[in-house]
Length: 208
Image 1: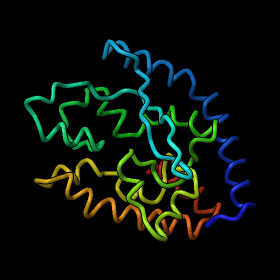
Image 2: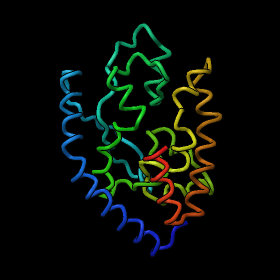
Image 3: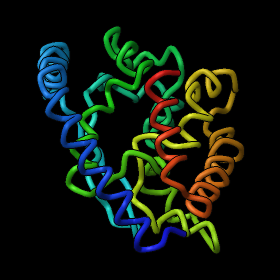
């Protein structure tokens, strides 16, 4: 668990990095939001409620990459949508969306989440409602830190959509295999945090 001093160091770095990141990337982000808005005939900036530090809810921002579909004839897709699960080749994802998601460009607006204190650059990815509340015992240490844009679990499962698509029951595979492994990695991250590791995770996310 991070000490008060470590939390301050981490937060100062988050503010500086996200501030200059938003200044440098503001125009590209705005252009992508406009293009996405035209493609969907809807606001290209998408907000979703997620569970943050101390289990407080916040709105996570992304560039919209998925179209709304009628799930009445596809119960499997409806279930995946409910739990926020996306598979490789998902028909909800647009052509532009595939590119944005592949390189995590759709997550750039989350620099704003970092700047205002909802998130950190590095940390456990924020879960949707229905997962974080399942954390028990020592695993709840994960909720003592701000969720991150990237981190060890994010890097370990960077090809998660491809991995899930290989299974007949992707929801069960996510709940029984991927999610528990993410919890393990996220708990190790919090319990063994270091500023040097955070820098390494950021570099891996940008250059790998």
